[in-house]
Image (cartoon, rainbow, N blue to C red; front, side, top):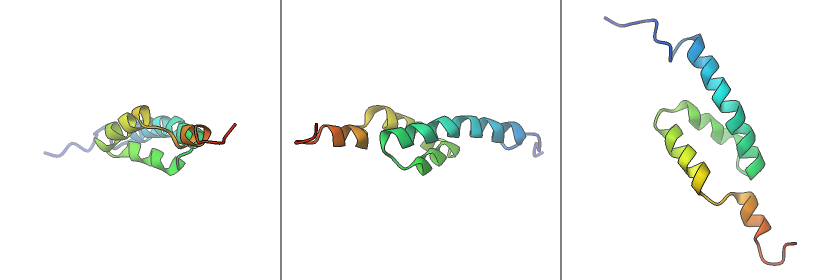
Length: 71
């Protein structure tokens, strides 16, 4: 029998998702990526891959400041 009271798809799940997306949105804006990437946090498994990508990749803002001739 299907359980219609799954917390991941109800109002609590939506509130939790919003709580996670807002800070990721701001982080993406600050590091020079499109903030729309934060919506990947709504996709299971992709959200974990995105967090590792965010943590270990060179951010566009870092690449611009490290470019030759920049002060």
